[in-house]
Length: 78
Image 1 (cartoon, rainbow, N blue to C red):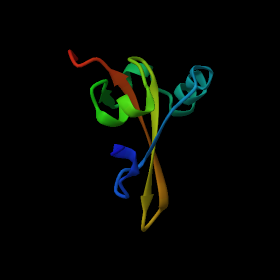
Image 2: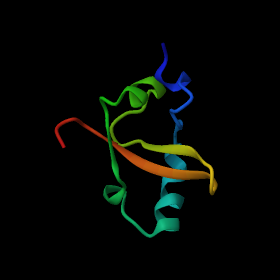
Image 3: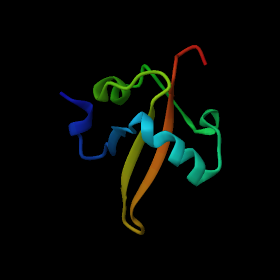
């Protein structure tokens, strides 16, 4: 069974590399300041993300409609 098919799992997608500079500028941060997501995470594996990728996580919210989070994929040794 795919982990992403469970109703409680939010949507995960890889941000294209050419969009990352705009994201960094928008939030005024450096790439290392993003919250981390381990390369061994089942959803990271499922979407095919690699170390250094930024993953966009879109969660449904009863109060806000939906919320978006970003995570930097890191190796397990971090």
